[in-house]
Image (cartoon, rainbow, N blue to C red; front, side):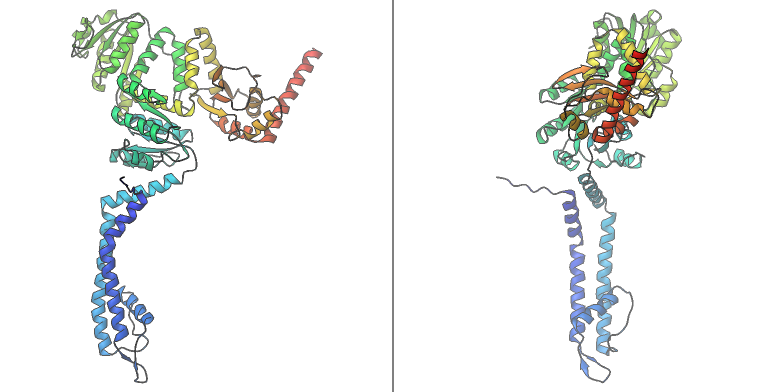
Amino acid sequence: MTVQRKLRATDTFRFLLLRRIRAPLIVLIVSFSISVLGFVLIPGIDADGNTWHMDFFHAYYFTSYMATTIGFGEIPYPFTDTQRLWTIISIYLTVGAWLYGFGTIISLLQDNTFKEVLKDAALSRHIRKIREPFYIICGYGDAGSLLLYSLTECGHHAVVLDSDHEKINALMLENHSIHVPGMAVDAGNSEQLNRAGLQHPMCAGVAAITGDDQVNLRIAITVKLLNPELEVVCRAQTQGVADNMNSFGTDCIVTPFKNYAELLSIAIDSPVKSQLYEWLYGTPRTALAAKMEPPSGYWVICGYSRMGKEIYQQMTKAGLECKVIVRRTELAPADTIAGRGTEAHTLEKADISRAVGIIAATNDDTDNLSIIMTARDLNPALFLVIRQNHYTNETLFAAANVDFIMHNNSMIAKECMSFFTSPQLTPFMQHLDQQSNVFAEQLLQRIQAVSGDETPDCWIVDINEKYALAACRILREGRQLTATHLLDHCMQYNQEVPLMILSITRGGKEYFLPDDDFELTEDDKLLLCGQDKFNRQIQFLLSDYDLLNDSIRNVLLNNKNALLQQSSA
């Protein structure tokens, strides 16, 4: 049996420190010992002319302030010439030892390896002291930075892992509302994930969103082996990797290319449903997305990489006519036109004048912008859809004035955020897909009433002893608790409708858009939608027995007054 000893960051720090200062420390101890011993053995003369010997305490005291050059004084009596000679020898011996020791310490502090170890030890201590739920973000590219911003804005803690030191250094310079520790390590390494808090009792989930599918796959496997109860969401760029992740129980798999293709297809069939998706999955406290209404008809798709292929398959499946433009036509459909799409003659060959829309879906942002500008000159009435590969080009894409921007990293961040904070949103959206456009339009108006001009927040409220002790106590007393009792408390301080319940999960069954008089039970999970400022109010209400009692009595009183008014009328 092989026994492996795993060192924590703090142990590594101590080991490295002691190994580097071992030699200077030995030299310092030996030089002090020799100096002290000499002063004890060499005889001196007291004030009466008698011979005396310095004791060890006074010898050590004299050597200490002599070696550190703090000062000089002959104690307790003036020295003899022999003692002064030994003092000269001791000065060169001990001061040299001190300089050697200080020099080693200074060089150690300047050593990059020691700096990294010191920083990792501090991060490890910080992570161990976290007492609130936090998420581990593996990969700090565009998707990771967008996800981190959304989490911190909603008051959630996070730990970031990325193999690129420059990205972690950039994280340290960002001004987040909550301190975010970052580690420049391989996120696919199980030991590094443990150091980041994988088995920490407050770890709430892991997001594996690096640019490498194999690294994401290793992270997902590590999480499911070391902490099976922990939720993990992974980015997958190919369906094969997604199927592999799904085979061992990955909780959520984000395939941005497929998601955008489906969203565009939904927008063509039902613009109001796609607008609801943008609102509910959007970044909180940002402007509400306008309705996207792509026309049905003939479309031109430039680029046949993973995204272009997904869009082509979704649109042809929906019965739309499509023409693909790509430089290499080997793996493209039979009627594909060879070219980049940036040239006017290539677009004209694709009959751009007859098209209702164009999709620039190549891997190059410059080419995509060029395609859109050329196509707009040839057909100003086109519906313009463009793929944005890099978040740093946001200003350019905003200035392009297109109808729809497909930013893969933004889609990944939205999906991860939704999964972590409101996992019930996915079944709710699946339920919405089965409803009519009239139903979706009415829901859109209700959501706008509670969110105002900004993207609403969605969050989960658990009716259990940990988060809603007062509610559980009232239910165990056999009393009725409904959604109205929750909403009434928030509306006491606000004229507008503060929030709405999108769904209630009970025993594995979903109740979508329940009425206000829907009776709540213990262990219910409520998916709320509205302004985040009411989140804490609801949590406080469910935990305060007296406050919840007052809300219930207030609702009963209002109902009684309403009945009296009706009877008198």
